[in-house]
Length: 175
Length: 103
Image (cartoon, rainbow over all chains, first blue to last red; front, top):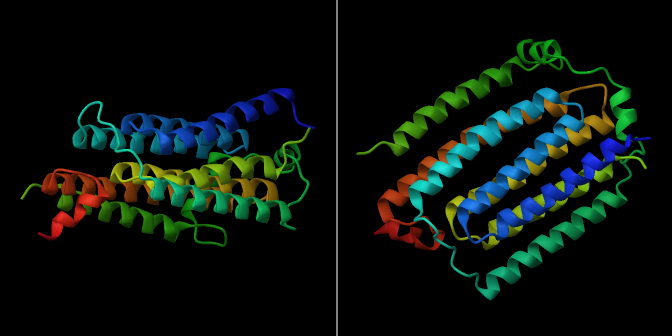
């Protein structure tokens, strides 16, 4: 049985997430779309917190809502005139988009509700049945080479970030 | 009332199809990237939800989401560098205009 506060929080966050995701793809002003994306990302972070992954929620806010959103806002300001509106959608394109997304939603929801994998476990049982993840656990998972430890991918990500820095400098540099 | 796994997966599905809709209908490259972020975000959320509800004893979903976030950040930074470079070349970020890059 869930606490009432948890259920209320769930509904607020779920509605905010769905509404802002919808507005992010339908808003005609691009800066507003980016702002709605920010709200969708923050709602996701709140879901992470509610599911018991505090570190992941903090990373989501710091990297996505902090870093990536700044990149988006800067690139929008660099490439758009103020108050510029997107051109109206052609009927054909809108119809294709609605068809694809509704078809995808129906298929995915059908698969979800028919999935035999779903167990009846609730959130409080799932959180109560597992130990809280501490920073020590996360540190060990990232810096070990045993089973369920990920030193090699961790280093690969660092090389990827280095390649990304070099690539970004090379692409954006003036001739 | 219990918050079971479906309660969390359904908003994630809706966020994903919103991303698909935006990816198809948008013409501006930054807006397409925003839709892409939405889809990626819902995939990350799914990792975490499945980890929490189906395998509560382990934390592999969380670790994979951390890697996915790092890779998404790198990918977005590069994509934005490319978009700004395209804007510098042809003065527009609409995908319909990018065939000007040929000439």
